[in-house]
Length: 256
Ligand SMILES: Cc1ncc(C[n+]2csc(CCOP(=O)(O)OP(=O)(O)O)c2C)c(N)n1
Ligand code: SF4
Figure 1 (tube, rainbow, N blue to C red):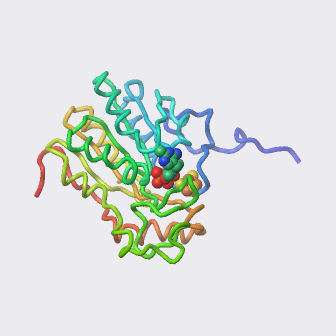
Figure 2: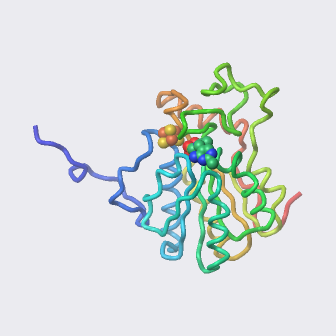
């Protein structure tokens, strides 16, 4: 039988800022990272900013995107993408800097960087993939693991008496960021809306208003050990019950 290659199959259109040679990408089937990065790629294409960008990815499954874009890219230590992109942006304010990370990288080891960058209103964009666990290292409890959720390190379910409540990142960033910040939580269950949030976050940086932060609810079927139906139900129905989807801050004013 003749072998079928990827050139024989009709491919869905890729964002032009993607590095075509590195596709298919390295994420597991059903992973949310690729969906977030497609929405980001389309937002970059629509804004026409590819040549001005520096993209930074963390340690965690986000590092699998080190060759994902045809864009200047830096791969950093775990939790350190925010300060690395901050440094690049400060050295060259013309750059549009994006820091991409997981919930472990952003809300555990890198939380001091994330929240202090927000306090300082650094003119960068941080995008965080919330998949309720430490994906790359095999599915341990993360700051975002839901109450009662089973992981490698919470085999009987997360006990919030012992470990506290899941981190509400956008709510925390919105509470400390000055006027000019943009903060939102999207989901891979609504990609059109997610792309809109990512576009507004990038536009906020282009306008020089201040810090921009978008958390995206996403899937990790490998560590959740879920089939396609269970995976989608968890993302679409379970996660938004705790993590409310929507915009929390727009640059016009500090609300509340
Ligand atoms: C300083 C440091 N601490 C710990 C690790 C081990 N480590 C690698 S990836 C990872 C967790 C990644 O989880 P997350 O940030 O949620 O991203 P995901 O893989 O789920 O996308 C950890 C703890 C490391 N590489 N470096
Ligand atoms: S382990 Fe989870 S987060 Fe990492 S690539 Fe696989 S599905 Fe995605």
